[in-house]
Length: 221
Image 1 (tube, rainbow, N blue to C red):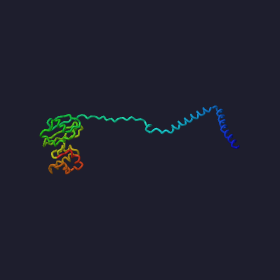
Image 2 (image 1 turned 180 degrees about the horizontal axis):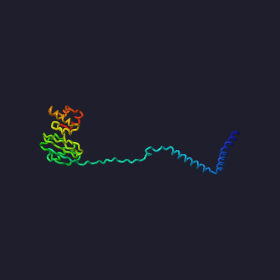
Image 3 (image 1 turned 180 degrees about the vertical axis):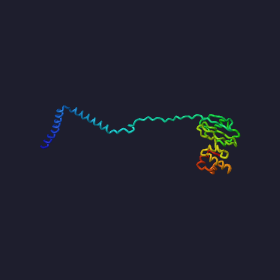
Image 4 (image 1 turned 30 degrees about the vertical axis):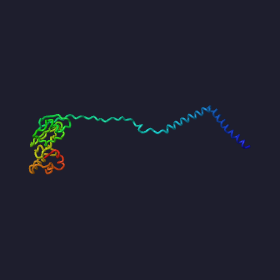
C-alpha cells in the first residue's frame, strides 16, 4: 500500500521539475533548442580561451630584432716595387727596381752579380731590401764607406760591420755606439789585437750584455 504511494509521488517529482522548467523558458521567451545552442557556444568559447592560454610563449630568439651580418673587409693593399742603388764590387752598379720583399742577393743579381774581388762575407745577402736604400759590396780588404742616409734620414747598413776594419765613423753608425764607445773599440783593437769573436766586445768599456745583444747581428769579425 505504501509502496504504491511512493511510486506515485516519485513519478510526480520529474513531472513537476519539467513543468517548472517549461514555465521558466516560457517566461524568458527562450526555447529549449536555443538554450542548448547557447550553452554549446559558450562552451566552445571557453574551450578556445583555455587552449590559447595553455600554449607555450615564443622563444626569446623569435622576439629579438634581426641583424644582418656583413662579411669582414679582406681587401689588402698591394705593396709597390722597391728601388735600390747597388754599388761597389758588382758587375753592373746602378739603380734597380725590384719586386716588394726582395733581398740583397736579388739586388746583387740584378746588378750582374759579384765581381771576383768582392768580399761577399761583408754583406748580408739575406737582408730585405729597403726602398730608397743603397747596397754597397766592398772589395776584399776594403773598409766599407759609411752607409748613406735612408729615405727617412736614418742610416741604412747594407751588411755587418767588420769590427777589425771599421773606422770610428762607420762604428758610430751602429745603434748605441757613440764617439766614446767607437774610440774604445778601436783602442781595444790596437792594444789587444783583432777581435776573435763578436763576444769580445764585452771587454770594451761601455758595452754590456744588452748592447752586445743589439749589435750581434750587425757586426762581424
